[in-house]
Length: 301
Image (tube, rainbow, N blue to C red; front, top):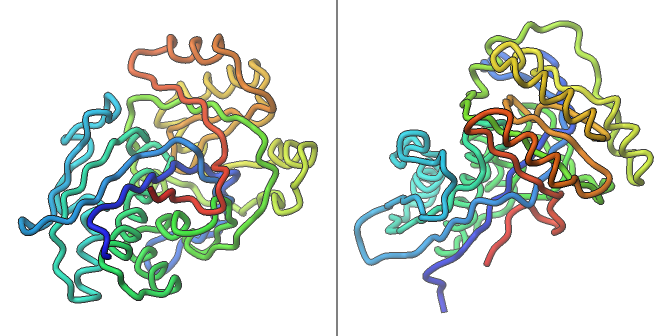
């Protein structure tokens, strides 16, 4: 019997290092990065309806900064773009009610929009029993956004190309991360456009970091070449990075195109660390998360 609804939890991601290799003829940049999905999720419910087209709504458990102004619910939303892409490619007509409990901060370098788009692709595949192979689905994902393909696969992966060429990884994962998210929205395109390209520095080989000691040694050597741009745009990031270091983080960095600032800890961070960061500036959200423990990034319920 065909399913009429599906719940998908779409995770945030971080980048353990991000090396920008150069600008491409298509306007994007070639990168080398390591993606890790985190157990900070948006929850999406896709329900088939008899008619009415596709309706996207914010659920009541969404975060305080998720509003129709900051998270538009029209055709520009990546969820809607994913649904429309499947309609075009398959010829089906979707009638769906989609409710999202939006918890991942928006335009924060955590990949929330890309993760949501991947969830929509998977939901369309499942609800319509579409015989789409994974290679095709990931090609569609890459056409929506550079990070979307990652969320359809392994919860840890090395990314090259625009980020859509992926190689699954099995890294040491017994760690905690503090995410400091200011009420500032940075688009990835805007950050990349202000990048001053120099000779790229390779990020260290996380592929060889499968134990605690090796992982943290590699993490301390890692870097994000977008970090200077983020610091110019959001100077308080410098203060947060220093505070996380002083608090005992084994590695500190900006995730992706920022402005989320991250500190990786070998043990659960104390409540004092979290409260100190929350109190430093009004509107700052602080999350404690761990790497996703399942093989795949998306969770289907």
